[in-house]
Length: 114
Length: 113
Image 1 (cartoon, rainbow over the protein chains, first blue to last red):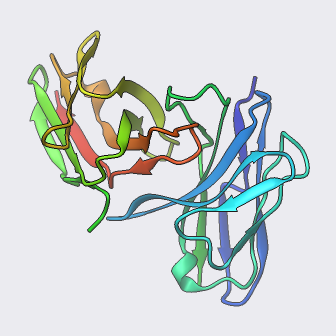
Image 2 (cartoon, rainbow over the protein chains, first blue to last red):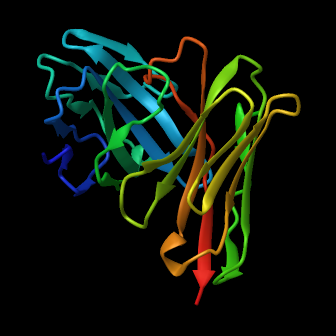
């Protein structure tokens, strides 16, 4: 199993550009989520999904869109990139076992917005 | 005020020392407490998990939760250079279904050989 795969690993954008961060998991996990990690702020939840066709907002959803058409994929779209979106983005998945706390994370996508 | 507060460090200790990492939280509804370890340029991975108050031991690692003082601790005995990483505490409430974890900011730990 590859686990959680994120692409691209690195990306540089100009202000106003749009892009999609891809996330795929091969563990048949129902739950998937996107976090951003910034110095001094820790991991903050952007959006999450509890199954195909179901998404919800997290703590910092503004400027981002998500959709979940399949169990495997959960792309994160930046609509009009801003320098404040410079961050490391992590996708995570877990099975709905409840109570174990084990999120499986990808290796991250490092985004710089100029 | 953040719901979970964690000293960001950095913390440097000599090999073999006992390390104590701590978090405090404000929401008394939190029932699940976790520690994740994150190596440089990698995603976090689950290290320890506890439910409610008490201690849990796994090899050189001990997780401790004191709900009366809303305090979470991770102890590392006989610390090794391979323990050098960022450690993040995380919490969730009683309706926890893995989807909503609240993370601390992380403490960067370096074990000096």
